[in-house]
Amino acid sequence: MIKVVIADNHPIIRMGVTKVLEDANGFEVIEAVATTSELFEKLENVSPDVLMLEMDIPEINGIATLRKIKKEYPEIKVLMYSGQSEDVYALSTIRAGAFGYLSKASDIDYIISAVRKVSEGNMFITNELAQRLAFDEGTQKPRRFFRKLSTREVEVLKLLASGKRNKDVAIGLNLNEKTVSTYKARLMKKLNVDNMVDLLQQAKALELY
Image (tube, rainbow, N blue to C red; front, side):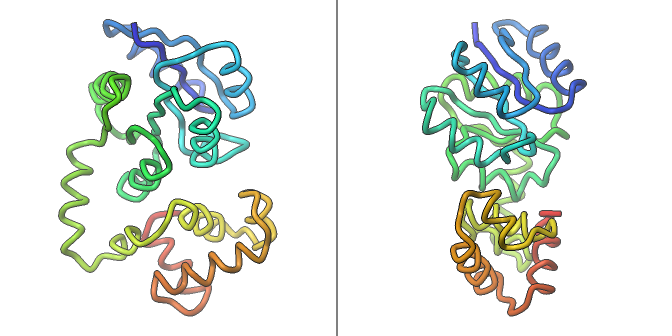
């Protein structure tokens, strides 16, 4: 029996994913939580094989939560899932230690196969994503720049794109303001821009907001 914890702040998603998994053979949803504080509280008492973690879960962003999970509960395999752009966030989350990425727009069958595959210690990305990543290699689309960005740089860019000031970004990511400024300069260089307006345009092209 594959034990699963679902972390998503939308009740209908938690209920839906729970039903899909429990109607299939071999799965048991042992907890379904709405916030990161609730998640870490539950993890003190339960040991899932797979954690389905929403990218935009409240309190701590998904990638920061993923890092914390990998540090404190390295035996838990994390499957990230989100309504956010798959071809941007899949690589970012996998770099941060996720075993896979699942778009909320994926077919229901993908949920079952993704959780099963991750539980076995294998990576999971959709065929569509794999094909898009392959095709993007030969294009000049803005998304190609994403390959140059580290996971932390993506986090900083997303917060800047949402209107956060350097100080707010620093607080949100537990960095100092000088480090955030360094990341901003690095982002401008990697995305080939020299001002915030163009940087935000690149963030938009990468579908970060």
